[in-house]
Image (tube, rainbow, N blue to C red):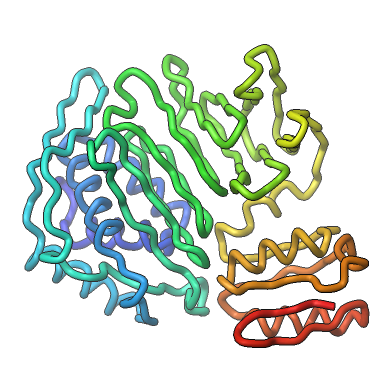
Length: 350
C-alpha cells in the first residue's frame, strides 16, 4: 500500500458509512485497483464492517470519533481470518475458509455520519450473512437503513432498507451474477467480456457498464427498473424470449401478476435514486404506495383505513435525516385531504 495507511483507512470508513463524495469514491476505487494487496485489504475491512455492525449499538457519533472507534477495534481486536485471494489476469477468486468469531471482534464498527451538517440518524449499516455451506455471500440492509458496498469488480451497490444482495464467492471469475431482493442502486464497472446480471423476483437485468435502480420487494406487485446511464436489457425470467431495452431517462415496470412490461420516459429519473442520499420523493405517487415506502423507511406500521383515499396522489420531497414520520404525516395532513391517528406506535390514515 503506497499511501498513508491512516488516510486509506479513513477513506474506506468514509465510503462504507456513505459519507464519501464522488471524488473520494473514485480515488478509493483507483487505489484498490493498484494491487492485489490493496484489494485484499479493502475486502477484509469491508467484511469486518458489515459482519460487526449491530443495530442495538448504533448511536449518533461525530465522524472523527466513529473513525477512531473503527480503527481501534480493527487494530486491537481483529484476528485475520483464514482467507485466500488468488489473482489470475485480473480474475479475483474470493474464498473464505474460516469465519472469525464475531463476538471476539467488536459489536459495532461505526454509526451515524453527517449528510451535509445533518446527522444520519436513521442511516443504518447492513451485515454480511453467510450460508452454512459458505456457497454465497449475502449483504443485508436492515429496515430503515442503507448499506453500501463495493463488489470485487469495483461495482458500487447501495441497498435500501429491508433489501438483500447475494453473490457467489467466485464472483467475477467466470461471471458477474447477483441476486437482489428489495431495492438496490448499481454503478456497474464495465466489462464487455463479462456482462453484469441482476436477478430479482421474476426479472433478469443484463448490463455491461451502467447506472440503474431496481425496486422489487417480494410484496410489491410491480417491479421497477430505472436507467440513469448506459444501457440495460430486461427479460421475464419465466420467458427467455421476452426482452426489453432501456436507454437513459427511461424506466420499465414489470407487473408480476400477469408478467407484462410497460416502458416510459421519465424526465425526473434522478428521483428514483434519491433514497441513496437520504431523501424520500413523492411525485404523483398513490397514497397506498407512499405509505408502503414510509413504513419501510421508518420501520413503522401504517395502514389506510379509508379505502377511498388509497389512490390519492402525493407530492413532496423529504429528508429522512431531518423529518420524522410525525413531521411527514403532519405535512400530509395540511393538504386537508387526509387525517391520521397514532395508536400503540401504529399509524392509521383516514
